[in-house]
Amino acid sequence: MVSKKRPKKAKLNERQFVLRLPEYQATFLDHLVELGMFKSLNESIVKITTVFISDLEKSAKEAKK
Image (cartoon, rainbow, N blue to C red; front, side, top):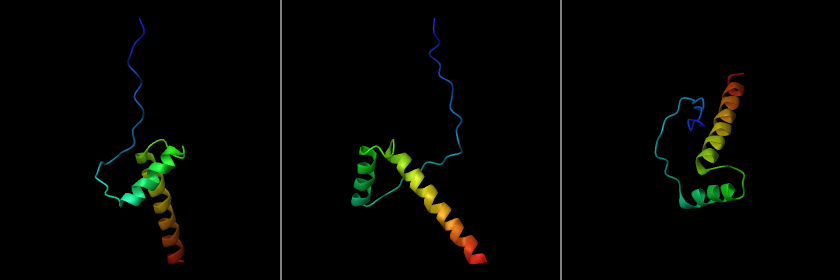
């Protein structure tokens, strides 16, 4: 008999919260998901936020110089 238990994925620390976006932004992100650029709306928000924060960190480091 085959076990139906799946191995658990390693989870990063996460926090859940409600994000309110203007309709046109949510529609745009949904369109990117439909085009296959992201797997889900959540993934798109996480990746875009990651890039945004990375850019902020670079700007902060440059401003310190």
